Length: 117
Length: 145
Image (cartoon, rainbow over all chains, first blue to last red):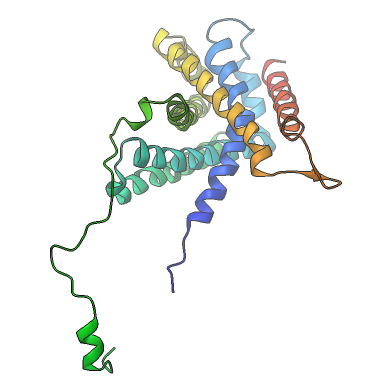
């Protein structure tokens, strides 16, 4: 019998992350990475951001955003390396680095969001 | 297998080191540079790098928020460096490219049929764009109000 493949799980995480990244990252990156540092908008105060992050719903939102986006990255970057650089033979190292990175990032996000307030 | 009679063993193909190899054309490492479609594909896939960078930035931001107002002011100053601005600007373009290609894939990934007729692609993709605008407006309002 053929070995059961885990590919479906990674694919679901990839596509869920793709939706989250497409819907949410552009606005957040635009605000925090461009509009606020360049002074296009009035920057939110520290207190205001802390008040937002204290809301459980915002923390769940940020956790889902960080985690799923990282699993999206892990899947896509893995195949970009396989195909783009023709290094399918490094399969195991690349797999470990990509998903290891996603798991570590998820753990860091969980820790920060759990202890932030 | 142990029950096989000598005749089948005799007729089994014998492999020598000269057996024919599979036909495998050599593909260059730079295969994606030649054609626009291939380049577009690789650029789209590379958007994932900027997705990961965004998460790293967000984690640093949360860590700075956790460490207090001074740490957060330092974090905001570091975002004003020209290098970080440049990376974020390029990243923004890549992620918008990801978003547009992602939303436009929906009609192919999930063909919708109404009354036996296939709903035109732009009508299937449209709700994603409406959601995108709505979500962006809500996030902006929450952050900036």
